[in-house]
Image (cartoon, rainbow, N blue to C red):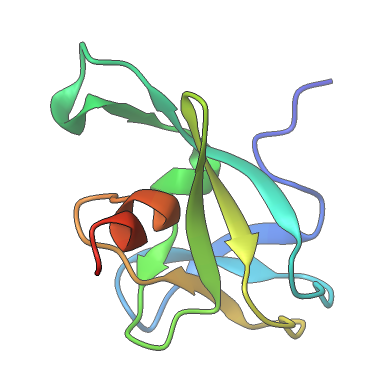
Length: 105
């Protein structure tokens, strides 16, 4: 059966903006929560958002990273997430983590 979100996440009203992703149980650091975007050049910015990618909000102190793998962008926790906490990423036009740091130096 298809699940648009992992069973430990839900969508709820966000104090950041509109709706956001929230943990319904503790999530350990380094958890890959799944695909948030799929590469498709027919769409604006070249990506299609999944439900996971469509409800993640921005934070300057993000608790998740967007990581590129082949033609996908995955959402991965960068620290332990507590039950009830909103999941966030630091994003600028969906530049994936590996790409964002490759130009530094």
